[in-house]
Image 1 (cartoon, rainbow, N blue to C red):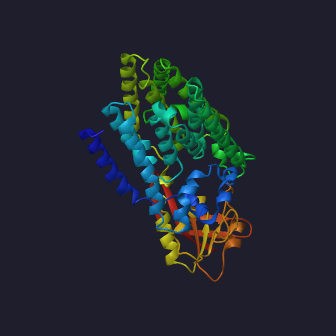
Image 2: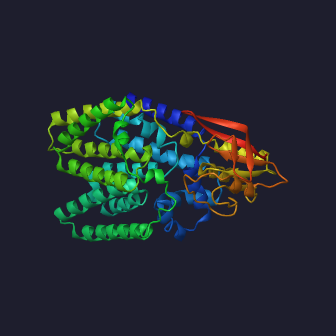
Image 3: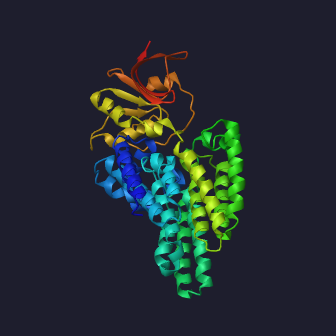
Amino acid sequence: MKSKTFWVCIILWVLITLVRLFNHQPWFDEANVWIIAQKANLFQLFLLPKIEGHPFLWYMVVMPFAKLNLMYPYSLLIVNWLFGLGTILLIWKYAPFNNWLKTFITFSFPFFVLFPIVARCYAISIFLLFLLAALYEKKSKYPIIYSVLIFLCANTNVMAMIGAFVFGVFFIFDLVNQKQKKDVIFSSLIGILTGLTLFFQYYNLDKTFTDSRLTSGINFNFWSYAFIFPQIINFIFLVIFIITFSFLLFKSKKAFTFVFICYSYLLAIFMFSYSGNEWHHYFFYIYLLIGVWILLSDNGVKDNIKQIISLVLIVLSLFFVIDYRYTPHVFHSNSKNISEFIEENENARFILFSGTFLSVIPYFEKNKTYDIYHYQTGLNINEKAVKIQHNETISAEKIYNLMVKNKINYAIADKYFDYIKDEKYNLKFIPVKIYNLGFNQFYYIYRIENQ
């Protein structure tokens, strides 16, 4: 761990990610956690997953900073970043990977660009999964601690839940085989508590506000865009990797079982429940890393097999180092810029056309209200939490009814408007500010006039 390679990688990782961190403006999902943690009590956190989809842990971690209204967004971002840094340190200290592989993992898109910067519940879950992997060989010495870590990991997000479950099953089997009866009882009780906690949080799940574009299941494009190459090449590489890793992981029953169960679970979710985004799909890579970690720790596996699987994983990780795909508004939300424009025009009426723009709320001065309404619900966002219905047809009448005569009326949207007409109203949208997100995507601030 104290090699020159380690220090060079860590110093570069820290410096570059911190620069990006302090220039990051949180998007809706990041700001939403802050708003919920600020307004909710502990009991309400356990009711949230029915609507929000994520268990309580990340909200609870953020809650002290949000309740104190402490240095938004930096406290939120730094706490998340620390879990990202912790993951990198776990890999370098405990993972049975060579320095080449550790380097490529460190600077891969999920570990370098995505999870340590975008402050959501995924960095903490990956840290806990890797901590479970790091303690795997010594888990029988610390059964209660290991059980609690499984409980915490399962309560971060749905993606990490399956990894925590498999680690838990392996753990109980090992305790039974080692005849640690008391530890079996206590660990099983914590496991039952974990299951009951998750059942309570997810029972009667409400998908009313889930984006319909993400509930149709994955299609061929999901497979053909696994990497950044042309579709056919992507598919060929994917097939090669699937066959190669399946063959090599099979040399360790635990490694193969771990990856097989986790992949089956992820595929079932993406195909039948929620097709997900790139931050969800990267858990295939996360679980593959853990599976290889388990294999390389298996003394029964031959050295040549370990060398081959390390080499193949290096190639795969290299593909993700040069991965540049991302959702633009996640990294370039312009939430701070938009909030500043609203504050500069505090006497105007604002109509927001996207849930993304609710990310401006945490920037506003405490106890100060602004004239901001959400188009789809007609609610003032200062008064009530707003859930988003997606893909609604825009109505000129509905917009007009939200406008006021004695103020300048602004619209904030991620779509280009010119005129919106119907039988009664003719609304003209005059661009005032345009924010370029990259990849030909923009945010627009318009002044609305009734012609």
